[in-house]
Image 1: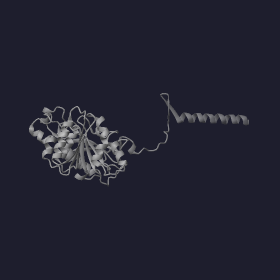
Image 2 (image 1 turned 120 degrees about the vertical axis):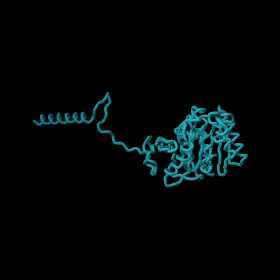
Image 3 (image 1 turned 30 degrees about the horizontal axis):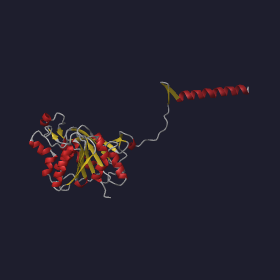
Image 4 (image 1 turned 135 degrees about the horizontal axis):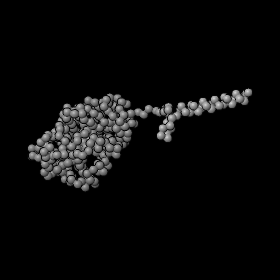
Length: 323
């Protein structure tokens, strides 16, 4: 009798075990998925791309983390000058605190680039993390706006007749009247000339120099990295002598008040557009005016393969600490 009872109990236990196993797992497409997912530790937004940047106090609500390697966020806001929503990327230094005040570098992309071209994982953001960690530069913000194919200028339908590739719109007004005030009011910046810098690559270099020479009260440092400085006729932007006088940094520099502005120019010796000729001429003009200018003619062409390795040199100019 006892043996039958034991047999019955064992059979019951076996049946229960099989039932629990069947309830605890389901089979889909030949793969077993646990009905109860394993417990995980929540990943902070700072290490997950496209997560809201709420772990840093004081960021705009639209802030989305887009780089795991460095603190780079995408920001959206409305631009009255352009009449549409615009976006920019911003690099925040390690330990960023919105209650403190940091210098800000506005870095403008090449003509065929975007805000994503500037803060690459092997370029400025990585170099900034490295140099800040080594104590060689001040912690700073780097703002990379989307300027499309505007050269950072206010371009009209008239300009479209000679520059079919240009983006029409008030991009100079967007940069000066919308973007800078927005950044100063939403981030911890030094909101005056002493802590505001501007630079750019290729067409963005022309935009940066144009902005610095026409708004020298806003910037203390400016950089043209392989800037689009044409010595010959350029009907795209300089279709009339009047437009050239208003837009060409080589012309603007002659009459601009450059007191308190430092300028960094560089270009690769294999630049296919020969922009080193314009950079050399501009540097000589600036030195003749006793402006603070430096020019670097280095090995390289007109692309990221030249600009990225020079990122540390650029940042040392903009935010370097005296050794």
